[in-house]
Length: 135
Image (cartoon, rainbow, N blue to C red):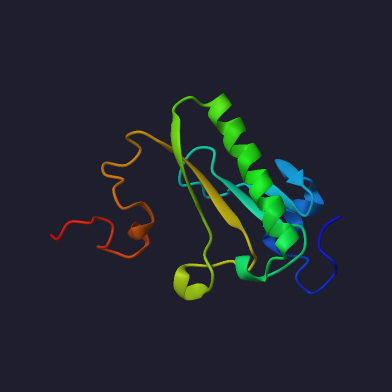
C-alpha cells in the first residue's frame, strides 16, 4: 500500500506511509501526527496516493476521510475531556496557505481558553477579519 512511484514518492506523506507512522488508516486514507502541531493532538489525514489537494481527491478518498475524521474525533474526545471543539479544514493552493502540495485535512482539537478570543474561527485566516465587530 502507499503511493505509486510517480515522482512524488519521496514526499512528506509518502515517506510517512512507507515508514508505517500512520496513527490509523481507513481504506484509502491515513492519519498522521503533525510535525508542527498548533494544538496538542492535531492530526493530518491524507490519501494513500499522491494528489495535490482536497479537490483532486476521489469520492472514495473523501468518504474514507470523513469516516476517519469521525473515528478520530471520538477517540480524541474519549482520551482528552478538555477537548471541547475542533477545527477541520484544508488549504487549496499556495495563496490559501498550502505549503506542501499534497492533499490533506487538518484535524485540530480545541480546548476552552486555548485562545483569548476564538470568535470568528476560520475567518482568522485573513488578518484582521476574525471578529464580526468593526474595530
